[in-house]
Every structure is written in structure tokens, then in C-alpha cells.
Length: 107
Image 1 (tube, rainbow, N blue to C red):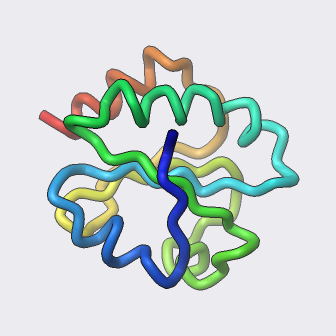
Image 2: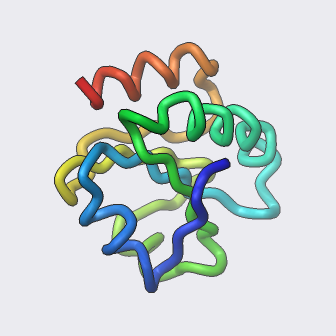
């Protein structure tokens, strides 16, 4: 299960992490976000040793959402060493594509 983060703990959980972090920017009203949720939660367990996976509710956390200019859901951003290094917008990626993408950042 992916950890839920918010504006208050984002810096500690994401920016200060000792490994790459995937942030899933999602919204309760977003059908593609809900469709991706099981895969994101599965990846959080499968890749737990190499990548930290967290979810951020954009409606409840407007500060971080605006800071990273997230305008469409879902948006997936990979952070390394406290900086955003890659992103994908939309729910068009398969589980396998997401694993390959994340493993490339964890290498």
C-alpha cells in the first residue's frame, strides 16, 4: 500500500528520502486515478526495496500541487535527491511499463 503524504510531511517523506520516490498526484473524483490505484499500491510493495511510492491528494494538498505545476490527474513524478527528475501524465501506462520506468530511475 502506498503511503499517503500531504503538504506538511512532503519534504520529510519525499524530498529527504534516501531512494527515488514516485509521487502519484491523484484526486477522489478522477476515474483514471482510481483505475491506476491497485497497480500503484502493488508497485509500492513490489518495488519497496528500491523505490518509495507515495500518493498525494491534490484537492487536500494545494500547496505541493501548485509548487510542481500539476494540472492533470493522474500525474506521476519521480523525485531523486529531492528534485523532480521525470514525470508521466495520464493513466496510459501498463504495470510492466511503470516497473521498467521506475527501475530505470532506481538503477
